[in-house]
Amino acid sequence: MEFAFSGVFAKVLGKTNDEVWALLPTLTNDKRLREMRRHLKGLDWPDETKDRVAHFIKAFEILVDNRNLLDHSAIFASVEGPTGLYKYDRKKGNTIHIVLTTAELRQIADEMMAYNNYGLLFGNSIGPKGELNTLFVKTWPDQPPLPRALNYTSEPIAIRRPPSPGGGVR
Image (cartoon, rainbow, N blue to C red; front, top):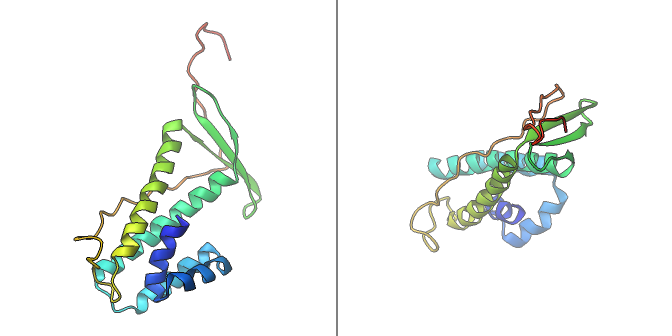
């Protein structure tokens, strides 16, 4: 995602890729997104391009939050049942958690990959004035739907486990 993000970031800020690669390590993701939004407002680009960039920014924000939650979570898993993830929330001073199936975790990874691929193509599709750059493509790349945001909670979550084969408690 970082490389895909950098290409779109460079276009919006009007910088070269090398300039952006020197700048990105000095900025948190919040500052990166704030800078993009600020620059985007001042650009005289077509509305369609600005809308696509705004959508990309929102998706990136969700994906970064998801990645950070997953990265910093502890896990308790079951081969047959759902997976629980939990972490301490420093801002709220409590433990938060979520229960997901393997398929839901896979969907989150797939959304990250989809936006990585989209971001690479989209960044290369933006011309100097925000127009479609047809050097690589004939039309704008298909924009994926916004990814699902992980919804951690501090409230109890009931976990239903399938019955054991012998009928006893596991």
